[in-house]
Length: 539
Ligand code: ADP
Image (cartoon, rainbow, N blue to C red; front, side, top):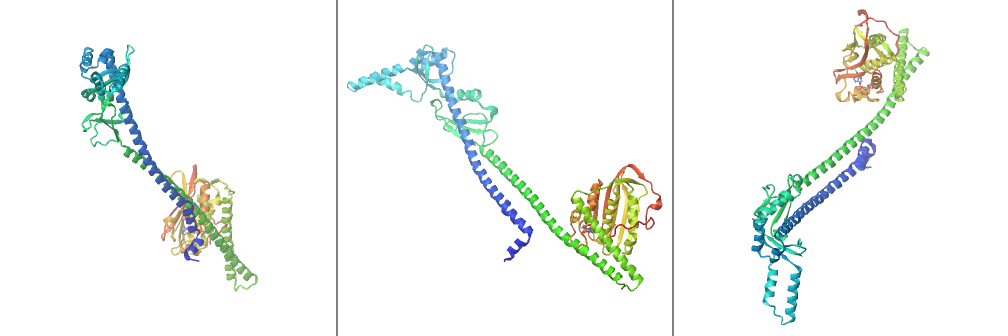
């Protein structure tokens, strides 16, 4: 088996990473790739449809302009009347228009062609062809006049007298350029909020009209106008505040950002799942460590107790002093077992949600003093310098005395366990502000690294220090302390630096305005206070 395969099979973390990469990360990367590609295509399609929209816009402008021209021709035709239209000579039409107050030269031509006159011309052509094939002169002139209508615009027309025909007209260039186009764009064109910008130019590029300047001349679409009235004129169109390119790019950026955001969320979700599963794995490893630790912790005191009890039973003890020492060992080891079993029982009660606290008004100073006095001898026997400071005027707290004593004992126990050289222990009970009481346990031990100060309150967690691993422990003590403080509406604080010692502080809410007056003598500094029977022992 290759090394890589071995690592993969042995290390659950590696396996977890492989599962995540295979099951989630790679598919989501592939999805993102597809999504990005799709966005690119969509952007191209969007650009095309925007251009089509602009082209449709410019097409309608062209159509409307020619509609406007036809409407103007009809108006003029109505003003001059059928007879003048049938005559059709420009000077006659112009005179008629002038007679009606139209001084401006609007038309180069304006006349009416009736279907009747066309029929006559057609009939005469046929007659001439059937004869000698020569066309008479008048007919040629009539045909020429029909040809001369090239370049004119036309519109069906029904006069007020019922005359039907085709109205042919050609606007004067000056009128189209100077007024007709401007009138249309300024009064008829539907351009809400001026979002569209147009420019009309002559074929040589001279600007005829524009509704807003476009210095760089960058228009989205252009169109050469088809209707004879505007023949050769060019229409240009763009959007006022943005270009299609900019719009599409903006949309693309937003969509890509959205995909990026979704990826980010996915990544964050993945990380959360990963860290939770990792935590579970870690916890299960801690649990198996715990089982090993606890079995070891149970075996050692039991072996000692058995050994010394057997030695005593067989009467193989050299002297009374030795016997006393054996009794002390048996007592100490059985108390250590009691403490361990208490912690485990409490822990299982907490896990099962069955842990109950008997809360009642209590004097924290008294509880701490009792614990100190019960264990002073053994602390000092281990070579520790003990300092105790209890404030005189402490408020009372609502607490479960036993639980509080157990929390304190766990802290004291840890201080003793995790001190190497400078054996010092200080217990202090003080008021904090008006509404809190604190109990702190300080040592000059190995300390806890900043990165582990939160983790040590987790169940089963033991710091990565060699001394910690040489020392027996279940990793339950501080998680119990935390639970007890939570149940009291308080908290646990830790202040520590590796090699410099630690201070663990229990913070509890004080009962409102209930003080515990204490004579100065009961504040313990060094000695004094009644010894309590040892309920628990540290190891
Ligand atoms: P245990 O002591 O049984 O390991 P605890 O929950 O009481 O479990 O403590 C968790 C961890 O916190 C310990 O393993 C140790 O690494 C660290 N710790 C607790 N108290 C102290 C202390 N006073 N000084 C240094 N480290 C400590």
